[in-house]
Length: 196
Image 1 (cartoon, rainbow, N blue to C red):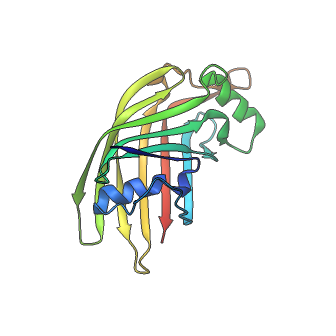
Image 2 (cartoon, rainbow, N blue to C red; image 1 turned 60 degrees about the horizontal axis):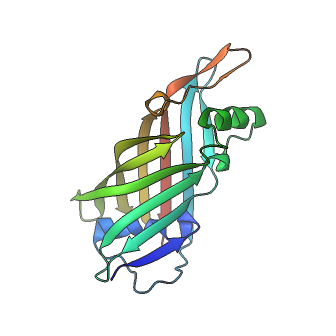
């Protein structure tokens, strides 16, 4: 019988998913909270414009993970509230929320459908994650890779990039200064997590 583990912070459980895929030793026994404190956790969205490159930080990520009684991963859903994406510049944030139509589409949602792992070295593995990404009212199938490394101090490090195009989700790249400043269509979601 499947057990569902729901966490409200990425740093508290979702990391465990990636470790389980890489090392096939997900250390999960009961439907309870697990406190995992990353040494470093960064999720950013990087993009360009005709004026300068830009970066926004994701400040909150929610996740829901389902495991079978044999501890096999059966599902993963990750939700990012659109209004948790911050640039530190109020005007840019508002333009972003408008582009997403955040009142109508408040969340970016990724639902895992498949995961595969390739062992690179004794300490490194590459994971390919495939799933459905929904944002701004549109859903597309995406695949991306992450590399998990074991550091010299015994910590785990997960790094990866997810390239996306706004127009694939029918998002019009934001403009500013009466249209004089135009953002590029391509963006990259970058994540870097390390923990003991």
